Amino acid sequence: MQLCRALATCSLFAGALAQQSLVQLIQGNPNLTDFESLLKAFPNVYKNLSTASEITIFAPSNAAFAQLNYTVLAPAFNSYNIDFQRELLRYHVAVGVHPSVSFSGGSFSFLPTLLTNQSTTNVTGGQVISVVEQAGNNFVAVSGLGTRASITELDITFNGGVLHIVDTFFIPPPDLTASSPSFNLTSAPAAFIAAPSILTEYVNVAEDLTIFAPNNNALQSIASSFASMTVQDFTALVEYHIVPSNTTAYYSANLPNGAVAQNGSVYNTTTLTSLQGGNLTITFVANSLFVNQARVIQQDLLLSNGVLHIIDSVLDPNATGVAANPENPGPVQIVPGSSIPGNQLPFTTDLPTSTSILFSLVTQTPTTTANGSAETGPGSGSAATSTEAGPLSTSKGWGEKVEVGTGGTGIVLGALVWVLGFI
Image 1 (tube, rainbow, N blue to C red):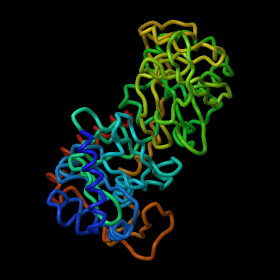
Image 2 (image 1 turned 30 degrees about the vertical axis):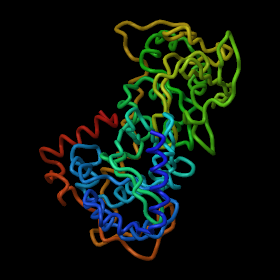
Image 3 (image 1 turned 180 degrees about the vertical axis):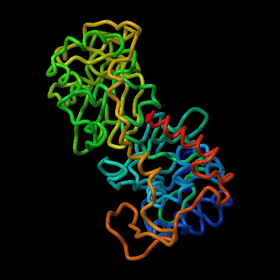
Image 4 (image 1 turned 60 degrees about the vertical axis):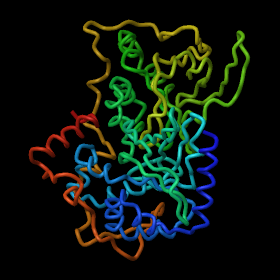
């Protein structure tokens, strides 16, 4: 394995010396013909990438294009949505040179991309993807909705950086409300919306949020307690699960950063300040991550404006001293209460029809014409003087064309609506 990684590093330097251009790389790889067609539809993006330096491109393979009609991205291509297609391209370009050796060690790397347009994302420095090396020298990249893409070809170098080929398109992360159904999470986002001191869309649009959301079982198990809470107490409870920031969301790679010896174990800890004002103690012990007493059961779920970690019990702003207990395998319920008749999920009637960024971009009527659109450089918010040739449709060799509003696409669009939680 070490030899393989050494060879990968040597290959990277050798490729840099060879000075292969991005255009030469793409034209010379038979697995990237559809990716080349997409780039040619956006000549300014293609030109800017070809002259850029210190970038990493995750290029969808021809097989990834063949699967487009079976993904939530299908409407963006079938409706010729030039704006979304352009942003989608940028989400496949990471800032910096990241050869496969940089993903080793079994921990996720979080890479900022050129997706910086605030109509699509609200993450400082660009929306991220996460990449990790798994067993068997397999590399996986994760994007929105928990979408996993295998890296099928590694470390193809060019004079501006390195390119990896992936078997699935990355999906730009939607907001909390739209993402939650994909993670079997419905009560928590509804509770955030129901809290009167938080604007309805706060958790969906505020910059660089970190959200610790109790799973459905956690909220269901104390559902009876909410009826007796004052507005102020309920609001404080909700705000205690949110960590605001204007610099970074707290992915697992950021947590924790200190070490404390306790009961014969080493507890790695750090403290974050919640929106409510109280502190949250983040602990890593016995190969598990905790927030106060709650165990994180799913971590690093990307959102349009930050990151979501799902926890197994509700946090209490009046019980900040309750510590992690790795010896207890089950949820530690510290908020008093019980389930309600019928085991109903609380707050779900508060869910709005949603304001998902991804949904609006994918399904909106394009504001540009088939003749072109003002283009911006990668990572830039200013318009350039030239225009694009126009977007592409899945009819161009990417599987059988399915018309919007008829049979097959109705199924795909219906799946999109379901996945994003609009029904």
